[in-house]
Image (tube, rainbow, N blue to C red; front, side, top):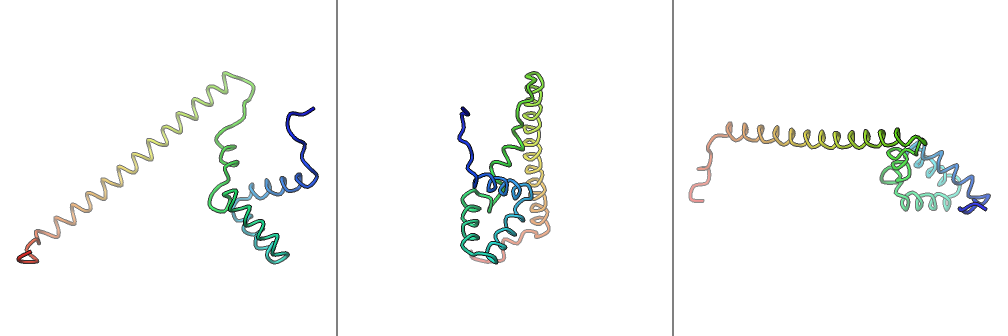
Length: 130
């Protein structure tokens, strides 16, 4: 006896349709919703509700993001440990690079502002008596 419930006959095609749309991204979901409005509007409203509830409307689905970053085990524990360590190192390097770029932008903005202030000169006497 399986430890998980068996899918119903209706759930199978719905799951396959969801996976097919997920593979094609947000534009496929939007096209499906528009076609739903053309064919049968209550179906499209249900699809819109599902898209909002599952966060497919406002970003990538959690399921797809998890599948992308958490690969299943290969069965080789040494390779899995190496892969996990390498992925963690790459994520750390990416985070450090993004931080570096942010600091670089801030430094550039500060330099541009300082240059603007120098070109502007000392115009503090614009409003006498203030």
